[in-house]
Length: 366
Image 1 (cartoon, rainbow, N blue to C red):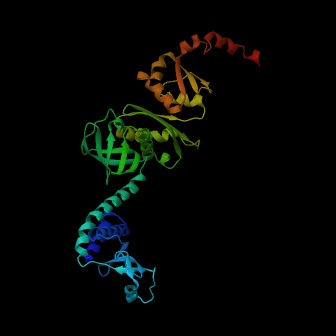
Image 2: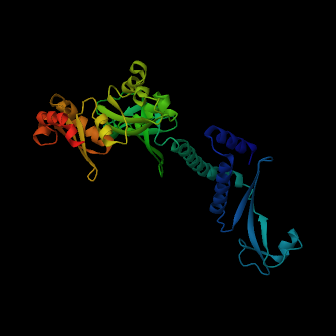
């Protein structure tokens, strides 16, 4: 075996980013397999590779016996003592059994096995690189598309954007650059598989982290996201420091920060609301941009009844119930919205006469 093979392995390891030891182990395994196949050997053999000289040697392990019954597995004590006088019966000895033409045969057999091991090692390298990007945003280039998938090149691998993960209002064109959310990375029999999304709420969270330094450094925390991709989203944020305005931080000067995200999501409307541990405050904020008169809370059922001015009822509910639906998803509370008139009729709000009487006679209850 010439030094060219070892040089080729060195270059392959550097080019593919694979540890050289992995390729050498693959080569040894291939040579052992080739020896056993071509020389019909059942012997336990090992291969020794000398990178300096470029020499390849095959050694068979044999048991020292008085009388040899199987030459592949045994060696007579007399023959063994020609190698080393100290050998005794039952000792294990290694005997060089390298065939003269083994280099040619081994090279042919090794090529396929090493190629396979390189492919496996490459997959391992790719998986290790991309597993750390799970639940993160990556930028890719659209390579092609069909009825079911948009194929996005993420560098060393092509990811599939399934129809269910696409934004319904978005068009995908070949060569377009696209930010995608990596939902899962799996190492399958066909190699690493990366699942990506444009509709996942996590995409919105990561985009805010990228655009808002206060979220990236932890000053402002994203508490919850509710999203109907391509149409409208709500995100609740919180700052532990009372001096920090969490909503203002996300909006940015003249709305530049949130506008960058809206542009990336092709015009998707985004409501940014302040999170609160008080459900009355939180639900009121979540129904933005509508105004709220009162929130009645049922802790046991985790439900709320929200009363809004008559003229704000349609705004609070939203088109096809979207505003109320997103607010409920954002807060985790059931939300039943009633107009001011309806609430008074049901006794959920005092009538104007009752309010006036109460205001004028507060001293009676002191």
